View 1 (cartoon, one colour):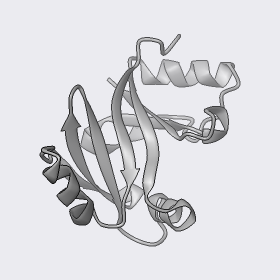
View 2 (tube, rainbow, N blue to C red):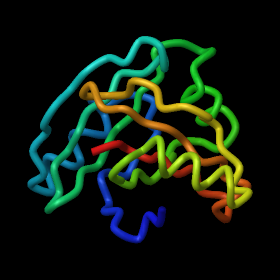
View 3 (cartoon, helix red, strand yellow):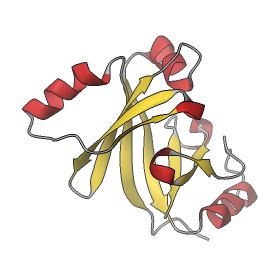
Length: 134
């Protein structure tokens, strides 16, 4: 299984405060879309539709969340890129067979009720990659 048919789903941006960051995007003419809390990941997120993809603003809900730790270590900014794939479980199996380091061995529930899994940045040139099942 190849993920060559994958498409960009969204780009995740870690922010301290969604509302502060959202002001700039609104000035650029980008209107907010879906907003939700993903409690098990410790984030509140705001989707911003941009063409065929989206920006995902990620605000930590507590100091122990992965996004909070990311901001503490690296500051606000690019957190991950997300690729929409078909047959997520098959893609994960293929990644394992090819020696690609995974954070998630099995899909888990993400924003919008989608199944997701993350590839470790050590296998992708330092970029956290989220795979989103279609």
